[in-house]
Image 1 (cartoon, rainbow, N blue to C red):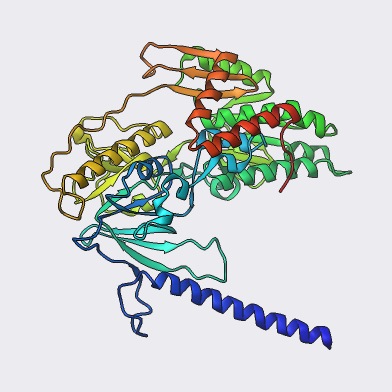
Image 2: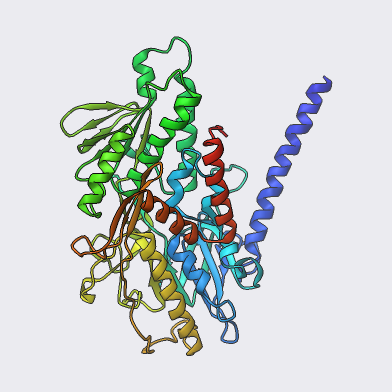
Length: 493
């Protein structure tokens, strides 16, 4: 009876704590409401109301990717209040994300908190970060509709609220393209966020340990240890190279019982690394093949829980399936009643404005030049997004200094030079001490292209200097040194 009474008391305390948590969250968000807290107004969405003429204008940034974070870093907090709305509170250094999947780098090495990128968000009275998804944009009333992210926690209900803006920057990024292929979302893992890399790492290590169980059939062991990568772009190739290196060095030493069963297959419909120089592509194919990666040209038609089906009818069993076939517009972008560029992105002019509405800009993967500008739609690359963010930060600072910071006050203002993009080249690693560096401005142009150890050194040096902060540079350098001396971390945490 004593333990029974203790259990009842514990259950009652848990329910009470849950109720208090909900009340605190709702009270915190209601702090931003301009409405009274009468019973009739409780159900109404709260939020940040319009700024007053004597207050700093408010820039609302949707997204925390390359474009949004570079924009926030460059905005002058003495000119603007900055509000960021994003389902993640950090920026991901995506070029090194593949390295975290196999323990070459730790996850915190490629993630930088937004509060470090723009300190005013955590310190200035009128600047905020909201862990939320944007659900709609009301361009007539200069409002963004949002809903909080709860990650499935049943102790906190999603909360809807509105944010008024003087300037809105849509930098919400893109989504992985599945081309409508059945089973991709259910069974494949994408490689775009830190939690994707964590899932891949846990799945890979789980399969390695399960395959070592006594009595497991040979066919099932081969399936569990077959890693399939779909998509031969830089992400797919770099991940395949990291996997091949992980197998040769770490699996052969630490999982010697199953080392002969694990294999990597890279499936691509056309040529791998199609934007690179032909000589570099041939080098990549040769090195990947040498490292044990099997290259298959084919089109995936269907994905099942334990195998995928190619267009020729052949079935490929897998234990781990990673999907990296490119990106497309997100559901949020598709839902917006804004003009679209070729490919379904938000249409923008030469100054990165959405021309049909006031005070709305768009940058990064979710935007593209309208056909009327005569400019091509730029590729969904980090260097494009970063430079757009830098340009727009300078432009918005200029607009505010010229008296156009508040809503509807920048009409007919001289914005200066339009945005111009110059491609700086492409880089990709293909495995241990080998990489590709293509410095041509386009596939047809002439320029320097390198492959091998020197390229690998350039690749590492470039990314070490491009990592967002000194904190992350220190983490990355230490992780690389630790991996070189002691091998990769194979803990399944």
